[in-house]
Length: 109
Ligand SMILES: [Zn+2]
Image (cartoon, rainbow, N blue to C red):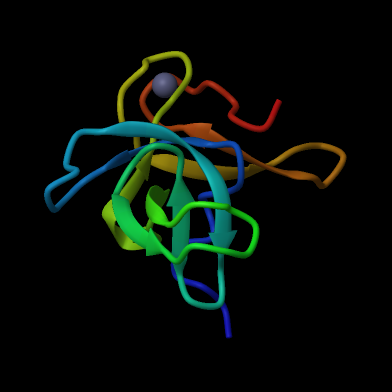
């Protein structure tokens, strides 16, 4: 099955469109294309309780990024520094690149 939002990739800069994290910008740490979700650095943090023992000697609360649905994310163009509509273009060597529809900046260069 093809994902509806294949344009967001690891290491992209994205902004959140909806929810309590709206407007936050972060780098994509991981994309789960199958579930259509991504982990964005320092965005959508959730507190998790850990039990004493194991790797951490003390139990406590750790903060961790929770996945965000890709439809709630939008790529931020490095040139305009704003959320932009992204297009796809095929280069002469047949490689596909993403570009900003606003300023034309190639995002995979
Ligand atoms: Zn742009």
